Length: 233
Image (tube, rainbow, N blue to C red; front, top):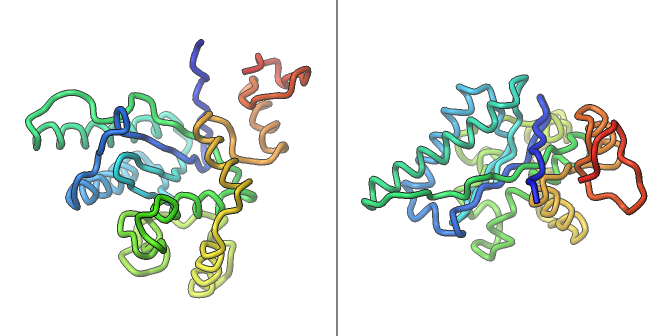
């Protein structure tokens, strides 16, 4: 069965997940995490890609990225990040071979409806995994940057900035939003959207994107025609 074509849209946030090959450990120690974040900061600036959120887990990464006009830059960023981490690990351990799965997963995210929810999903990963009890206890996500606890180099997205006019109030509102946790229905939607390469958004967003690209990317109920002349996926 052919793979679904990846959908990358200019100036739209994308939830990106990349896992270690066969779910192997990709971050074994502090230097591994630090190197990846340094590379992410450097390469995203070079490729004009905004980094709205990040979370580095032991065997995978979650990123919330905003490509510019050149959508192919997001693929180059992920390839370069994977290549640098692989070269470093192979040199360190005297090994060869791949460190990551060959194909990362991604989902365009509707800004006004789901972007803050997706940010919360990304930054709560270590809490859901039982690694820490609160997001502020985990040093390898963007939560501490967002809360002003460490140097902030991530880009603050429009949905987050819209929480309040003042940064202190914005942080307080976001912290309360995170404390409430993720409703089960929302968790399932966000997780399945990125795993299946679908859109994270409401039906209006889905249909607008499908009309732009000319083919269907969502699983449809039997009998529902695809808009834009594309084949049902």
